[in-house]
Image 1 (cartoon, helix red, strand yellow):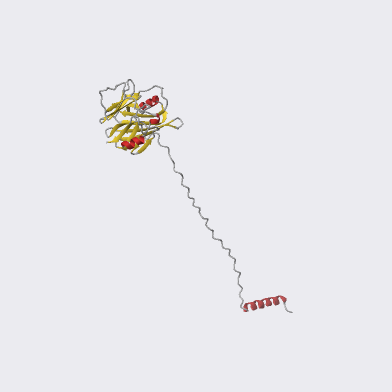
Image 2 (spheres, rainbow, N blue to C red):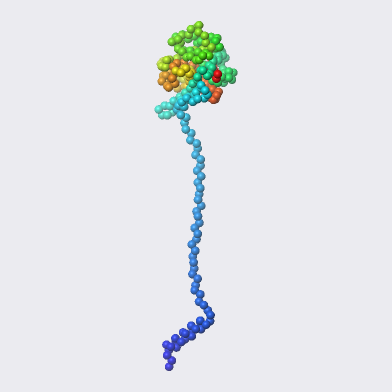
Amino acid sequence: MVNCKWLIVGLLVVGMTACAGSGATAVPPTPLILSTPTPQSTPTLQVIPSPLPPVTLPPPADTDWQPLQPGLERRTIRLLDENGRQTEQLTLLRIDPTLFDFRLGYSPGQPKPLATWQQETGALIVMNGGFFTEEYLATGLIVVEGQASGSSYVGFGGMVTLNEGGVDVRSLVERPYDPTETFDYALQSFPMLVLNGAPAYQNADFDAARRTVIGVDENGRVLLIFASWGSFTLAELSSYLASADFGLVNALNLDGGTSTGLILTDPAQEIPAFTAVPTVILVYAK
């Protein structure tokens, strides 16, 4: 009797031998490899800022004296109220009379715009002169090229005299006009605003208006002053000029209001006068 256990073992050995003899080789399965995707770089957005508009700063309240050419300086002063709003603008020219000539232009009865005066004379500086009548004649005494016309103020006002030797501004109360005096050019106006460094006019009889002033400082320089916004009464301007750091010894008010005006040709600047005038002050470089 065949033992069943050994029979089964024998059959298993034969089967394994048969498989090995056939030459087949078992191939292990290829493992599935999952690749990790390469991360794509995120594009960088380049932000180009828009250019900011230029910042415009307000002009300084006081430019101080700025040289324009030898012997000629300019200063601009903006007066502000308590809220920072501008109420007046002053333009000042300071001139060394040793380097410049001063003259007068006078066209009685035939007023001219400042631009016409400048074209006809070729002056570096043209500014309005003193008061005039409805007939466009100078009030007070006026002397042009040594020839006098009109009548002198008596007991009030002042006079500016322009000679080759310099410029003088004087009170006609303190130093009345003497008919024996001779000048190349002379012009009378009123009132005196500064006399011997102190305020010279305190009356409240004039409203605020545009103002033109000529003065002489402690160093003999001539100051031409324009308050072109019309905020000063004469009393206020007198007090202001005497207390400012301009060093004024004497200063005389000229015609104001619509007559106030200036033409400076180099560098170019204009304060427009709103009316033609018969009398002008002219300044030339020597």
